[in-house]
Length: 276
Image (cartoon, rainbow, N blue to C red; front, side, top):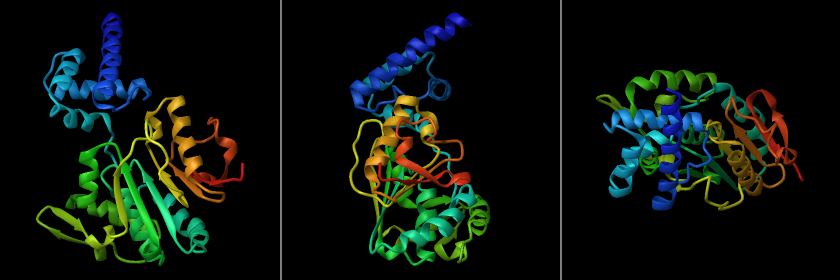
């Protein structure tokens, strides 16, 4: 079993190199345990015997790439996930944001859009939507397309609604979508100030100054060097007193950029950019 695992690790590293050189998707500094688990799922579901066979398939058939990206990029989210985080944004961060005449918000790694719509609805309820541009970025084109469509399974709405209530929602969530058959479609007006864009925290640069960056449950899949790169991008994007929100299991404590931030709402992993 040990020999098999060693050979598989070699195959995985070769596949990640191939993906980078063939398609410029760089997963080489993702956490190995996570990548291994997801590639095993891909190999089994795509019906190939080895990781090497998966590499050959994706190298010679570009149509295989989107299928593989579905496994390599995590698409697990929900609206108002961790309601305490959104309540803290509403009660602690929004009062500061209301002092700005215009705002730019970056949802990095937006996946299929649930967090984006959570922010847009919250900002609409707080009277900030009209002065805000939301940048929703991800490396997975299928996820971006789903985010732009704003269509979700109706059986998820009960969870979304409860999260919204616990996050201090001032409206009924049902005000923002219509349902039919087994789907719910969120109001197109929620997307009028949203820019959807392909952007990689691994290879791309900062594209503008932001007052708030929310990047949650993305860096847990990165190794330390890649985490530092991502936080460095956020540091560059945020002016003094700008805000950074991370996931519940993420921290800046060990980042080489930690001195550039201070705890703002410690328990919800919300940080504020300092002047350093």
